Amino acid sequence: MPEPRVELRGVRREFRGGAGVHGVEMAIAPGEIHALVGLNGAGKTTLMRLMLGMLRPDAGEVLVDGVAIADLPARAWSHVGHLVEQALAYGELDVRDNLRLAARLHGASRSDAMTMADAAIDELDLTRYAAVRTRRLSLGNRQRLGLAAAIQHHPTLLVLDEPTNALDPAGVILLREAILSRAAAGAGVLVSSHHLDEVARIADRISVMNDGRLIGALDSGSIDLERAFFALVHADDVHRRAA
Image (tube, rainbow, N blue to C red; front, side, top):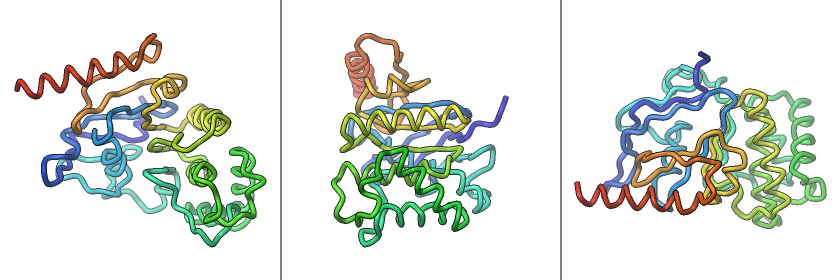
């Protein structure tokens, strides 16, 4: 069996008041698209930040391709792509320059960065905005830029937090195709979303998170995913109140 692209072993990170992530076990295999769903405040973004080394766990460990994050060489991060919370881009730079800079930060040469940026602009249909300064972009196009930066270097691990936020239907379709193509090439993908029907189109697994814990899974082929989701969350809430 190949090493998981990323694995969480008993990961715990708690904040004042008890919020956080509590003992999460998760592994994402090469070529797998794993969706994470939950209500606001369930802990999805915190889990992703732990997975990416943006936060340190209080207990447990995170491994990327079998190597603990603490021991991961810097060059390994060049194979990771992510968009968590909001796109990181420089407002005074245009779309093309932001993408070239992002590619360089992932270890690409100057010439490769130019090629990668142009390919990403084409893939996410940003051609008409390529020379537009980022501060002038709409929220939807800024989101497309962030997604382009996350996928342009063809990462082997891709982590996307609510990636369809502010996207129009055309952007959602382009993103769906981009995620599927990266997974087909062997990337492990974790995507959080509150659009259950959308993640069901692409996800191999759908995990439900509530109060910082993984509480179960949804069947992507279910007729009424939303009903199944709320039933699972409600049952967990009732169980915790009774405990």
